[in-house]
Length: 269
Image (cartoon, rainbow, N blue to C red; front, side, top):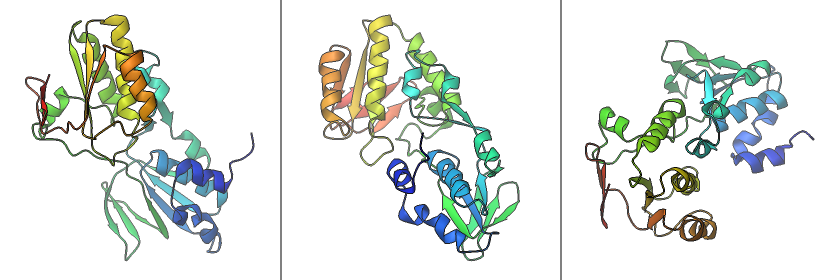
């Protein structure tokens, strides 16, 4: 396999030109240049790797609280039992072997004037260049503000190692004839095909194991937003009778006690 080129890296990672050409600019500085990368997901981990490959004289520190990374990509295959959970796990050993300084901590402050990153544990990291790639967070709808309520309605789009087994257990415990309600947020959101892929994986499991059950998809958008023709065929042909798709159905509230989702077009449970 040929080494990846910078142009290929841009296409694959979709990162900005300022990050892509950062190694070249750093080579023009002293060999003691320091880069701090916040977040060890796809963006942060990939950036840290190629900074070390392209600029081996640069010191790269990756700030990430977790010991391993669990990928959301391909996690939908876990729910029907197609893959084990550890298939989604990637340790940071490869980055460490490439000379990346893995800092197991969280960032609490960034002083852009002094070029200092302050960590929760009190340590301060100076930097010449800073890459901020913390990932996403959630804006929960009314009814899911409380952690106890959130625990009853797991999303499993992050915190995979805790949330994915909980969601799969709930799916397997669901009686034959039950409903699996899945919501799609309005654009923009991370990984547009993700909710539709999960719908198909859950529907595939229900066809085999709970044939009287169905998946209800409440999409806040006016239509499927990714691979439209493919997923319409999947819902209407491949999984016909197992998927009930509703566009223009943004979530207005969730009752975690009754497991009911309210939308402008009605309530679903």
